[in-house]
Structures are given as structure tokens and as C-alpha cells.
Amino acid sequence: EPEVTQTPSHQVTQMGQEVILRCVPISNHLYFYWYRQILGQKVEFLVSFYNNEISEKSEIFDDQFSVERPDGSNFTLKIRSTKLEDSAMYFCASSEARTTYGYTFGSGTRLTVV
Amino acid sequence: SQQGEEDPQALSIQEGENATMNCSYKTSINNLQWYRQNSGRGLVHLILIRSNEREKHSGRLRVTLDTSKKSSSLLITASRAADTASYFCATLPAGSARQLTFGSGTQLTVLP
Image (tube, rainbow over the protein chains, first blue to last red):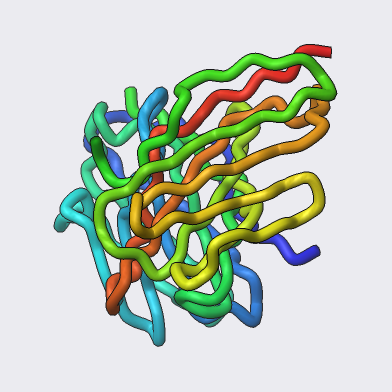
């Protein structure tokens, strides 16, 4: 069964550093998403991406964050100048269509900012 | 309560029993989805029910949707120890928004 692949599985970074989280969505999916889950809290929407542009973003997704689909297969989330409160599990997801199908999530990247 | 709130927060049952989890939401939806998450792992899509559907089955899963009450339930029949996980409902709002909103989840423990 097709999978969404995320790398790395765990990243530790110093406060103020930049990190790039990588995702390979399912190849025939058209919609891509990033979500995060702070330990013990809800899964929160960050951003959705369609047709090579951001289609929607949450209040969390401020200028510190950016997304890119550099080569037609990878989908990346960049976090600039990381803060302690950015520590969370970051999930990438993709879907064939917006409303007809559920999302396929990756296993996540656990980001720890120290 | 916030969009997509599950009830109960935690549920502990014996293997073989049925587990029922409920979800309430506030705004009009396009669809409602249920996901499962094993500890420290990713979210696995279980089932999607559209706003014009009332009931849906998939294997041992049965989902109901009552749009007049803005609520849904997930029933897992004949539970197994392997069903132990957190279960989340997530709503996709009606209209053009693409933001799938998750609830806080129900932690299900199935005792062998």
C-alpha cells in the first residue's frame, strides 16, 4: 500500500537554528498538508498546498514557516529560527482529492528544540 | 466545546467487548473522518462519512453521523488488544476551506 514517507524521524536542533522537514507524498495525490502535534495536545493544521502553491494556512503558520515542493516529489517544511515551543511531532499528509478521500499521513518527524 | 470533541477522553474495555466513541462538532461539515494513532506514531485513516450519509461500515467499524445534532459515533465491535490506540474524529468544513480539524481524541485501552 502506498505510503507517505517523512524524514528524519527525529531531529534535535538548537534554538535559533533552521530546520527542514522532508516528506514524500503519494505520487498520484494532488493535495499536501503539514500538521503538528505538541505532546499531549491536539493535532493542529499548519498549511495545505495544491497546484504548487499554498491554498490555506493557519494562524500558526507565520513568517517563520515556509513550504516548498522543489522537485515534483518532495514536499518540505522549513522552520526558521526555531523556538522551544516549536518542539512537536510534525506530520505530513497527502490526499487524492479534497473532499472525497481521507488523508494519508506519514509517521511524523519528532522535532526537539533545545 | 471546540470543533471535533471526542467523548469519553479515555475508555478501557475487555477484549471482545464493543467500544463506542462519540464526537461533537460545531460548524457545518463536508465530511467527518475518524483516525487512529498508536502511541508515538502517525495517524491512520479509518473511515470517512459525508454530510449526506447517516451510517457507514468498514469491517468491525461502524460510524454514524447526525448532522442535526452535529455529532458522530464510532463503534468498534468485538474489540481486540491490538485496537488499543487513540482515536480522533476530524471534520472538513463545508465550503472551500481545506482545513481538516481534529478533536482531542479518545484513548482506548483493550485489556486482554
